[in-house]
Length: 174
Ligand code: K1U
Ligand code: ZN
Image (cartoon, rainbow, N blue to C red; front, top):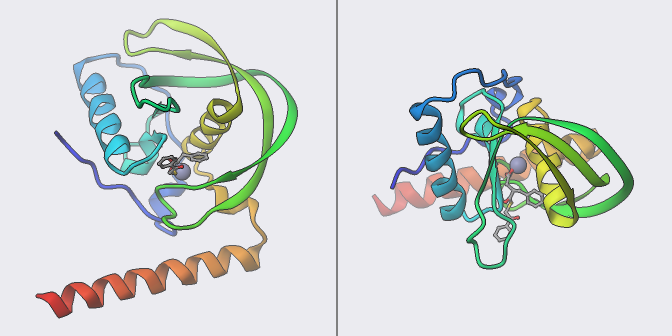
């Protein structure tokens, strides 16, 4: 099993815009597999390639209860959307922080699979929220960007404090 390192806010690499995938080769399939393993281990329900410092338009997700419905979505494009809905979101790149974000309630995307085959997918509920959250990552956007600058700065300070505490705990036990 390969676990990839997940970049954390405010790492500037999370702001990189992902480029479209053009080579559907075994290396891409390997990255998708490693991303799924990293997502399940975190644990999370989604992961964008940008979060593991691979700036290509690929995301993985599994919003099933049983964690037995992995999906790999490449070069996604929202081709229709309707309604607005607010949902509480978390992010593996912003650990321990949860905030309400308003997004489209239903979306239809066009994307490609690992063989490069184009498909369309209708999504609502958690699936729609998760796809939009991961597509934001591919555009270099984070869910904390929907917060006020003041709240975002509070999040940054809280994460810095968490990291200082984790570092001092590690030093004390060394
Ligand atoms: O992109 C990410 O950082 C993954 C993120 C996806 C997401 C969650 C909630 C709303 C929108 C997008 C996560 O998976 S955070 C962890 C999480 O939500 C979760 C973890 C374990 C069980 C259930 C949920
Ligand atoms: Zn995220």
